Image (cartoon, rainbow, N blue to C red; front, side, top):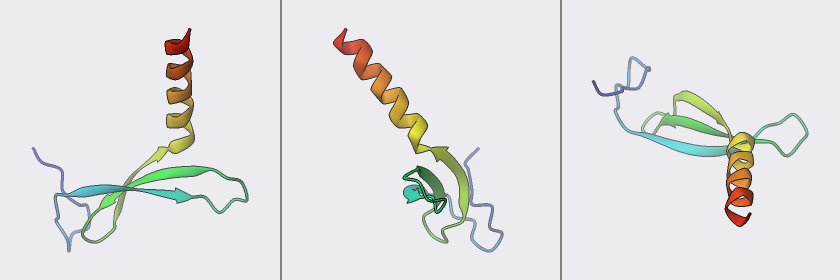
Length: 63
């Protein structure tokens, strides 16, 4: 089963990610997973969490 955009007027099946800075005053970024046709957001990934995981993996590799 292929994923489709939840926007009933769109129905596109291709998605993209876009890094966005939150407007809460700190330097926190998230990745929005969105339809590449209409921009409807279908998911959010905490980019800080991804960076923390990558940092931990690098540290393990170096040790």
